Length: 120
Image (cartoon, rainbow, N blue to C red; front, side, top):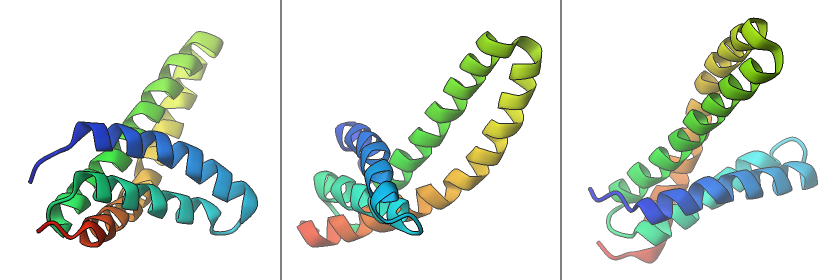
């Protein structure tokens, strides 16, 4: 299993962009479709087996969760001090748990993308 960091970064950026765009167009399931498409792109870029695409998609989704949690902690603390830090910590924990769903969707998309490329 090879981690293609370029594909992971592209997937992270696409998950934000496509998740937001599709979330506005199709309110109920649009963000899930955007995440799945971002995962497919990651898997296609990474190539290899379905497991390789799955791993790259999962890392891309997890990377997004970590970055969002860190940004919440930094800006929550800067804006509201200790109360902001406490609120951001609780929010980050909830979002981190929710992002496991994002990680799973992007992992499935990554596996599909690698299968589409069909290098294995």
